[in-house]
Length: 169
Image (tube, rainbow, N blue to C red; front, side):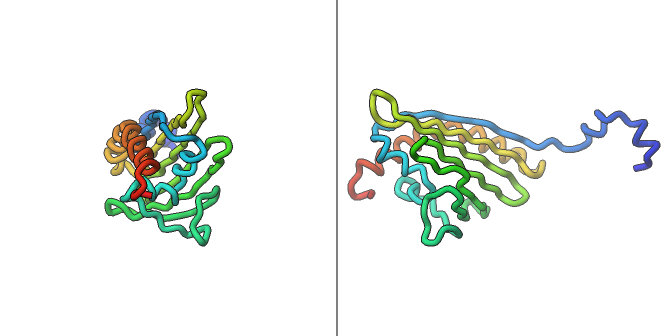
């Protein structure tokens, strides 16, 4: 664009021409009737396999696979390949966080906070933040964001079943 012409076009009009990228933010909470020492590790990527039969991470680091801060793994699901890293894995403080991306589609942060209520069990708060990397992914990010917030009952049921069902262990 000509420098003189660029000075005559208001910045707001130029910004409007750029496609905006969708960003979703959703969270859910739930209570597990499972003691904290037994429940907390189940929020690790490797341990999630115990309660989600469709979850199959392929660990790149560490070897052998382990739930720890800095782990890196890939997931093939729904026609996409995503690369994940565990950015926080602090069971003592009840904080687990993942960051993953699907190249050219979106980046997602999953932030999990666990606590020990005085009544027993484990309380969980799960936050999802998704950002489209291309305007073509906006609808997908919006749909996933709406779906994410509804996952509390599913997570609760699956985790509790994995702990109480002897053949499922």
